[in-house]
Image 1 (cartoon, helix red, strand yellow):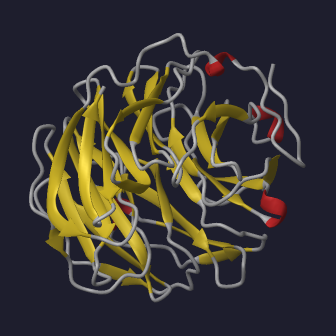
Image 2: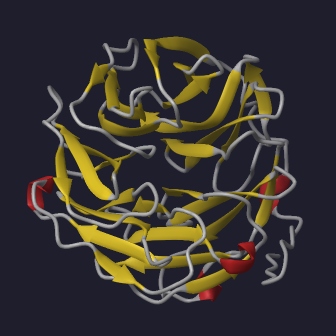
Image 3: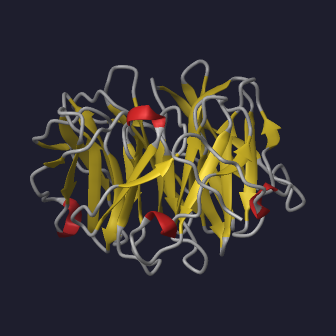
Length: 350
């Protein structure tokens, strides 16, 4: 049923190509995040219940942070210090959200504890891309970036996220920044990362928290992937990829042995996207994926571990980049979206 090619995408007629499931546009509500402006893609992570914490790179190369309570946004807060990449936010599984970025090649991070954000701190590094972070175990996060030598570099936090191991380089050929997702609580205690390599194929690795072996998943991918943890009853993690035709495809890790055969193979999700898609678990096995199409509208689709609904237009005509979607405990997700005027709005649904 699933096919793989190391030279190009083979888009097999998978179950998740069916569009006969739930309409993605069933019930979405757009909510402005305020008047702050930024220069890149947002990153959001669920803190608890209906609280989601988000960060963006501000127009003055500072980190802007905000929270959503399921109904309304707070005020954007500009943190001290300078960053030069999009942020990566993740829950640590122990009552905190970490948001990190590159700052002149160093690792720059802040922690949300449910009430306030810590003053930013730095870890000396030689990052050559934005970092991507995932929850390894309760209170522990692994962050990975492209290194200055063209490989990847990684660090793991101590408990509480206030101490970090020295960033360690791993030799490989990384063309894009990595995309990582944590899987603590899904039966696989690992952080799984994917990135493009020479020839636009995809390499994947897992961190336990130390890196394992690189797997070549094939493909022909443009840009940085996006990865998310999934319902462990079927798959452990999904990664989404934008192709050179601007459509989205996906591959999924089934868990178990870290070999290429434990990945399902690329499958088509469709669409013609501006950046990439972003997904979040809605409830149970159901995930919601959002993307901005070539006409600057927000589209979304649903996946129930068996069937992919296809992308349906939700609304808007002034959006750009890649949204960031996070889980709400109302059996909905919130997707934060950049507008052409560099302000940010959000879509809550479906």
